[in-house]
Each structure stands twice: as structure tokens, then as C-alpha cells.
Length: 395
Ligand code: NAD
Ligand code: MG
Image 1 (tube, rainbow, N blue to C red):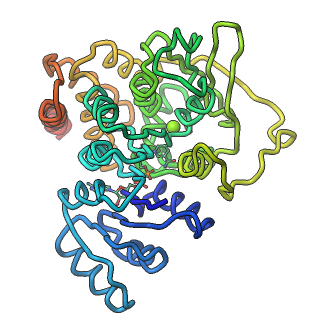
Image 2 (tube, rainbow, N blue to C red):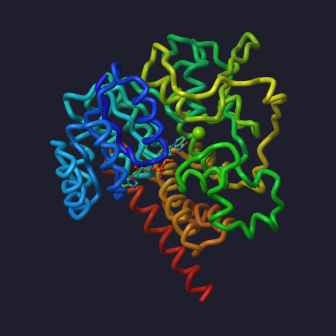
């Protein structure tokens, strides 16, 4: 299989290449992209010898070209957002790993769907922003959409093998998304008010990029995943439930009409869902250690606390509102997380900024990509303006 990896230099990208390297007879890399980690991307190019490599700027492209020339490689180096879209739709690739973080990943992920690829979807923000548009392109182009997010991959594995997007026909009652609860599961409101970026990015069970680590700490990650599940499985909000499960061993569950509940379990390592989607419907070695149930010992479950973690509630609210709600939520969240990491916003300010943005942006329908991008822009501008007022108030 010929593969393009968007966001190769990130956490998911590196895990993808780790699985690929275990099966040199099975996978060939056509293109790799990284935003500005040029040295790392050069090392990946030396190992996987792609035909194309994409970086964020002309300066990064010159630097990468130099490094690759010294290594005697003929990889063509491109740069910018259009180049991402171009390599996502290359005719010579069968599959695209969509692992760019945030809204920047939407245009290339959509391009891969439009080109009818096997799309391995890690970039949940793309689906949250543009769910209806994205899913209709997937259907129109006959793309095969396989979820990489561990919860959705678990749901996919636990769904009827011929699931058609009709929960009633599949006999599915509920989707149960598990959540570790993040590093502050038991923190008091006072402690939450003092959380620093360093504490927020240190997740107890998973090693991830900075943005998704903060999302896990606020539980916005689970909120985005509820919206993601809505689109992937055509499930209404009231049939998607979140269950706190601190061990992160059960990755999610499907509850059936007959009382059966099917789940997928495994060690918390993204190489499992990545290997699953790369090889589907077959199975391949991922490098992940065998699950030791005796070492795990016990599995605990609890209800999420929406008062301490209001972001989850905001995401349900945006999903129920429909239209531009989820795109505005996602945009405001990206602004808020960046401000928190910059120490311009306290941890509890993230939810407040998102709520204020949702209140300020009028509802609108999202019939096409232009409307999605406009909702994203409006969400960002409004959140930034509210943030600037907060800065003034604090000065
Ligand atoms: P990361 O920060 O480690 O990597 C992000 C990648 O995107 C990097 O390759 C970076 O160069 C690239 N990138 C960043 N900004 C860009 C821009 N403006 N234009 C082009 N490329 C850009 O993130 P990650 O943890 O690997 O997460 C990637 C995606 O996968 C996210 O959407 C995240 O929500 C999702 N995801 C991650 C995990 C995980 O365990 N890390 C699990 C589930 C879902
Ligand atoms: Mg997840």
C-alpha cells in the first residue's frame, strides 16, 4: 500500500512511521509533511525515501532541500497550504494518514476524501468543523474512512461488521466513549484554577502533542470526540455517552438492543489503532506489548463531572445547536488553548472564553466548505477579541 503521512513529524505521525517501518514489504511512503521540524522531517525522508516532502515556509523548504541533497535523495520539496492539498490527493497514493493538528488539517484531509483515498483520520478537528461537508464528500468519492482516534477506532471495531450508519438497523442502542479524565480528574476547583501549562501537558496514560494534551486536561478532547462520533457513526447526541475510565484500557464500547455490550481493550498506545486502520480488514503487528490483565487488575468507571469540566457540556451544546456551532467551538478552543499555553489565560478561562464566543457568534448554516471556513474565521476573531479585552482588564 502506498501511503502519504500528513503531520509526519507529530506524535501520531511518528507512531505511524514506527508501524510502517515494521512492514517494509507492505507499505511504501509517497509523501511526508511536517510544519517546521525540518531536521526531523529530513531524518524521516532519509529513512522512508518519499517522492514528496512538504513544509510550512519557503525558508524551511530551502533548508530541507539542502539536507536532502546532501543525503543524495531526489525527494521533491514543496511548501505551503496548497502543497498539503496537492500531496493529499496524489494519484499514486492509496491511503492518507491525516495527522495534522487543528483546523490547518481540514483542507488536505478533505482533499484526500475527495480523491477517494483510504483516509486514516486522526485530525478530529477537521470532522468537528466540517462534519456534514466532509461526510458527504467521503460518500460521493467512495473514500474509505477509518478512525484513528482510539475511542472511535474501538467503536468501529465493536460495531456490526456491515454497519451502514443506521443505528436502529444495526441494533445499536448507545455508543459509550471512555475518557481517562486527564491529569486533573480528582482536582479541586481551587487546584484547577492554578493549573500551569507544564502540568496540563503531562498526561497520566498517553504521550501526545501539546494541543490535544491540554484538550484532555479540560475534557474538551472528549467533547470534540462526541461530535466526531456523531459524524462517523451517524449517532444523535443523546445516544453518545461519556464514561470516565481512569485506566485507559477499554478504549470505548457499543451497547446493543439485546443487552450485549462490545468493547475493544488494549494498552494505551496509538500504534494499535494505527496498525488496525493501516491493515484493515487484516491484522498486523504494531509493536504494542500484549495486554496483561493481571497487571491491570481492575477497571473503574465513573460519571463525568460537568461542573468541574464544563468543556464537555459546551461541546454537547454546540452539537445540539447544529449549523456553525461545532466549528465556532473548535475555533474558540484553538484560540483558548494557545492563549493558555502562552500564559495569557488561566486554565479555567479556557471554558469561559469558549462559552463567551459561542454566545457572541450568531447561528448559521454550514452548506459548504466556504461557510465552514467563514465560521472558523468568525470563531477565531471573536475569541481573540474577547481575549484582548480580558488582557486589557488584567493590565
Ligand atoms: P502533534 O502536535 O504532535 O503533531 C502535529 C503535526 O501537525 C506535526 O507534524 C506538525 O508539523 C503539523 N502541523 C502543525 N501545525 C500545522 C500547520 N499549520 N500546517 C501544517 N502542518 C501543521 O499532534 P498529535 O498529537 O500528533 O495530533 C495530531 C492529530 O491527531 C490531532 O488532531 C489530534 O487531536 C489527533 N489525535 C492525536 C492523538 C495522540 O495520541 N497524539 C490521539 C488521537 C487523536
Ligand atoms: Mg481519543
